[in-house]
Image 1: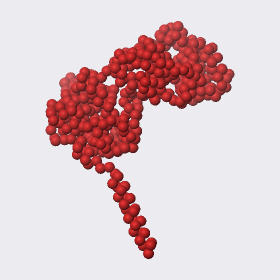
Image 2 (image 1 turned 45 degrees about the vertical axis):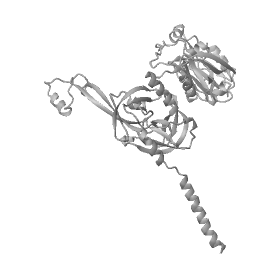
Image 3 (image 1 turned 120 degrees about the vertical axis):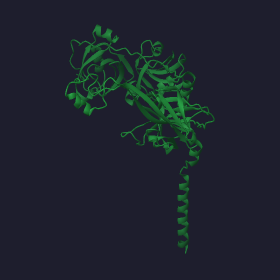
Image 4 (image 1 turned 90 degrees about the vertical axis):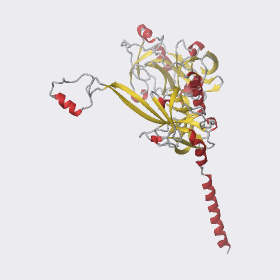
Length: 477
């Protein structure tokens, strides 16, 4: 009898648990109803002006009397050289309203180069928009329409986001207006190639072409990001989407609104990530900071005494956890400000002060001329490198006062990261850094190291400098 009573109770308990789990799933309807009206569709038109050419360039391969001319006109009836023409290029994107007076935030790539920007609201009203400013470095643009009393998106704090929490995106993927997709926060603070100033929010909410510039909402109905990029092999959604944190976007739009441009700080260094091997090589307890691979001559860092091989640990008291943190911290600093940098140099921590300068869009980069062929290459050393010393002419041309030219690389893949034409400027091992000035000195330093030692070599390659790790030196010759 007891078994007949317990069985229904057990089934009831399972049913109640299942219902509770169903109730835990998010309901986005209220959020969309309240915030969806602040999301807009953006369409742009760009006029491409030119002349009607033909597949053979500006010059016809034959004149009008040639029998082949009729054949050409048959296959290319619309190609008439010399006749001006205009073509329209159209694109779609999204955006959201941040002021009742008509200020709208979107991506710079949505409106870049557009001759006409048209904004459509959810109530089907359409307005021509004026581009107040764009910032390609963060991919943020501020546009404005002449309207009043508009619904405004509520903004949130992306710093409070937690990985795994629900978010939704509203936009116009492939032109389908006011489409809603949901997902979670996959990661925070993502660094993407060629994107130095944005700690991206990664999400698996479906983002497709046309979603660009649209908002990413948290469950409170607050905008936490501006949808900007996707990683895809097909051009469509594959579960990897990236949004610009709204605090970064609002800081940019504030400058665009007041001046039409964004002013950023710079200190004049080239940096790279500190790996575990590099940290060990420079005597740092754990991988952290930004390794300075080169310093711009006459720049703020150079004037402050920062050197190649320094590892920047803090900027104005803010910890540089990884190298990508430094450009953001420096970029957010007002040019002309005095800042303090804490760095690691040869086993000790130093504090240096510098005055931040302003980054320019078109910064001239000097190019070294073609190097003359070195004379007198020597035999391969312990690393399998055939080296020669720089001639006075080469030093003058490259603006270097020391270094060895790599003429050949032997021992195969063990030295794959070094290439002929590289210039070895320095070597670091176990926290000791040495400037390399001669082949004899270089080989002597190598001879003093154990065959299992990992060394770091500072290399000049073209116009750039980088640190290269070599694990294990092999037997001394």
